Image (cartoon, rainbow, N blue to C red; front, top):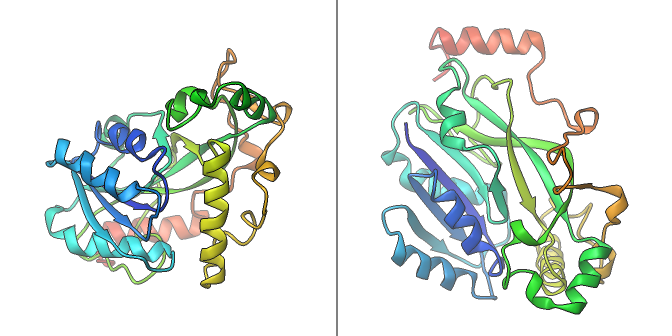
Length: 276
């Protein structure tokens, strides 16, 4: 079993090395597509690839409008390295896994083809803002995001891994069509979307540019003009330093499993080999 990371990046210079070093512990290969970074992200990827050439591949740097379908290009270019049963990961540039993907995926039955991930979404709180004023060195790129940011909410989930087979067709979106049956268990990871004032400011500018270029992905949560508007009250979050550090708000997380009838149809069609 091999694991292929498919990473799409733009302006993540303060964290990209942390993410890729972490993912390199469980990925056999990581393919990176940079869609127009201006902060040195692509240069950091290239430098890191010289250190771990067997794992990290700087696939392409191209200043094109954001779309999740951009991941399709790395998949199509490198899919010949995959065998049926290998796994592909939708890898973001600002996430660190809690569960070891290699162990987790090895336990997934062959009749299941898709694994969803649970977000532990970390936030930049008013406590972080005060701490950052006192000493900027407490936050990325001077300190690892995993060490710096302590407050999170766990109220979201989405597809993160799919099992490869030769018949997969990737037309658009963040993954190929007819992926198969979803595994009941979800893998946990930490997501660090907002990390310091400069990074938040650049992220808002980057996403507002994408919105103007026609991308609708960020239109609901990246319209602020001041980084301070992204500060989240610590009192509304859980703390990673608490005795129960990984609290999941199950009542807020979207359903990840198919409806019973749909699941039965999938199990039959894939089990009988009727869906390539």
